Each structure stands twice: as structure tokens, then as C-alpha cells.
Amino acid sequence: MAHPSKSNANHRTRAIVVALALGVVAGLVLHAVGPAASEPAARFASLLTGLFLRLVRMIIAPLVFATLVSGIGSLGDGAQVLRIGGRILLWFIVASFLSLVTGLVAANLLQPGSGFTTPLSVGDLGLAHGHFDPVEFVLHVVPTSIFDAMGRNDILQIVVFSILFGLALPAAGKGAQRMILPWTGELARIMLRMTDMVMYAAPVAVFGSVMGSVAHSGAGILGTFGLFLCKFYGTLGVLWVLLTSMTFCVLGRRVFALARLLVQPILLGFATASSESVYPLLVERLEQFGVPDRISGFVLPLGYSFNLDGSVLFQSFGALFIAQAYGIHMPMGQQIAMVLVMMLSSKGIAGVPRAALVTLAAVMPQFGLPEAGLALILGIDHFLDMARTATNVLGNGYAAAVAARWEGALESRPLAEGE
Image (cartoon, rainbow, N blue to C red; front, side, top):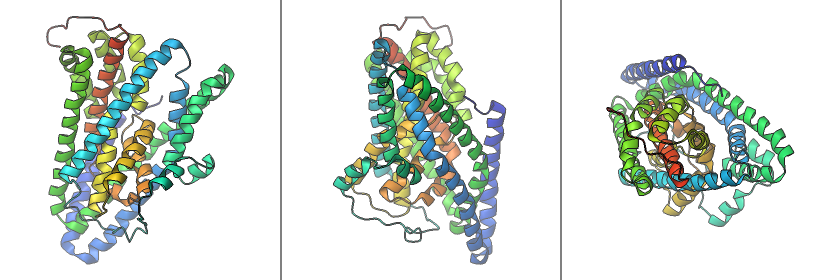
């Protein structure tokens, strides 16, 4: 799978930071000039961010379809694969549900969207917010046509079709698998490459979103953004404790030795904001802990599609943040339904920088949340993504060690001094 080099990733990180700083400076200057300058600037900012969001939405349908089908279909039908895969998928489901609920509870308690002012109101966006009907929602889950669902970017219907397609693939025989799996695998690689290409436009979109927000609200928005970052990082800290507690139930006290070994991969993931860049180092550290290569080589690729705990938490936390920022009330029943949808849609998240935004953009329209709200997050998303990625690395390291213990394959190896 093609991924940007570390040098390119560093250049892009610097470009985003520079764009963020320039956006702040430009926004403060425009706000000081007054509405005559800030209002046209806000419209220009909406053009930059709008183009970026359209590029992101363009990728959603084929990316989710290819990732899910290739991930599920490649499980095969061997007894060992089904045993390991079934157990670890159950772990992924529990961890994802825990992550989503943690984000949901934290967002309700901390109210991260309070204090934000939005350049556009919900009415300006032309969005309707009717009463949530559970019966209509369940009926809506099943697509009448996959092409219609893809044309409308209906992520839930695409996910349902993709899961059924992936499950049916092994039953269709080896010939079907040999023909379809390479195709979906290559399609997934192409879409990931397209995602990477689209992210080259991220610095421009960051500049536009930050400039527009600061020009509209002034310097006060900067403190609000800092508070939001603190709340998100604190929520991830709670999730780290919960995931470590879960793993302690399987590994016992050895989980603390594993956590020490994972420090370096976690720091690398935090610095690069890409789970994929950590893969070789993560395999090496797991081997030092006693996880056989055959276990880590199976669990980690699966985890990169199905077990991105930090990115999953961001889905519920980010969605409620946007609802709060726009003053949209979401009843608890609707929040629970959203969590269930995200349980499915999050399985299409790819381990590349800012891919969590793609999935969040896909889910939001299902619940009447304005996609323009992503512009509020975009300016600081790189710093959010760094923490999300570090959490993803921790979760997948834990999952591989748990799978090895369940298979009775976890070796006991003394740690070298300093590890």
C-alpha cells in the first residue's frame, strides 16, 4: 500500500502548522478592520473549506466499499482464521463500543461545543431537522439500490451492502475470491492514495477555516479552541485507562510491561499522525513482548480497518460537538442510534491522516448535522489526529497481545533493561 514518505508527512505537517498560524494572523487583521473586510473573507473561507469537503465526500463511497469487502472477504473460511478472527473481531466490537460511549458521555458532560459561534446557522444551510422515527430509520438501513446509495453517499446503506457482500464472498467459492479480492484490494489502495492526494489541499482548507472563524469571532475563539483540545485529550486519557483495564483482565500485570514497550510506537504515531507509519516498529515491539509474527501479522492489518479506537471516539465526540456548536438538540434516543450507526461506519476508517473526517462527514447528514461544522474542527484537526493515532496504536497493540494470549501463543520474555 502506497503511503507518503516520512519526509512528505513532515512537510505536510509543517504546512498545516504554517497555514494555521497564517489563518490566525489574517483573521485577526480582518476582524480588526471590521465587517467590510471580515464578511467577504468569511465567504472566501467558505469557498476554500467547501471545495475541500466536496473532495472528501467524493472518496467516501468507494473507500468504504473497498475497505470493508477486502477486509471481511479476506478472512477466508479456515478453522484457525475463523477462530482467531471471530475472537478478535468480538474484541474490536467491544473496544469500539466502549470508545463511542466514552466520547458520547464526555461530550454530554463537557459540552465542548458551548462557546463556539458559527458563521452559518442551520437555517442558512438549508437542512431540515424533523422528528427522529426509529421505524423509518430501521427501514432506511437496507438499500433498495446500492448505486442509488452510492450516488447519495448514504454511508449506512453502503456499509450494510458491503458487509453482506464481504460475508457472501467466501461462500461463493475460491474462484470468486480470487477474482474479487484482488480487485477490491487494489481499489482500496487507489482510494487511499486519492485520500492522500486530497489531503494535500488540507493546508489551504485549514487556512480558510481558521481565517473565517477568527475574522468572524475575533481572538476569543482561540481560547475556545484550546479548551476544546484539552477536553478531547482528557477524554482520550479516560479511554486509555479503560482499554488498559480491559486488557488487564486478559494479560494481568503483564499489561504494564506491554504498555512500556508501546511507548515508542505511540510517540511515533503521535508525531506522524499515521497508524501505517508505525506498523514495522509495532510488530517489532510486540515480538519483544512475546507475540508471534503469525498473530501480529493477522491481527494488526485487521485492526487497521476495524479497531481504530481513537478515531472511533472522535466520531461521537465530534458529532455532538458540532451539534452543540450549532445549537441542535439531539435526544438521547437519537444519540444512541447514532452510536449504533457509527459502530458500522467506523469500520471503513482507514489508518491514514485525517481519514476520520471522511467517515464523520459521511455520518453527519444521516442525523441532520451540518457538514459545514467540519470547518470548525478542520483548523485544529491535525492536533486531534495526533492524539487519535496514538490511541489507535495503543488499542491495536493491546489487541494483538490479547489474541496471542487467547491462542496460548504468548511467550514469556524478560524485558531488557530500559524497556
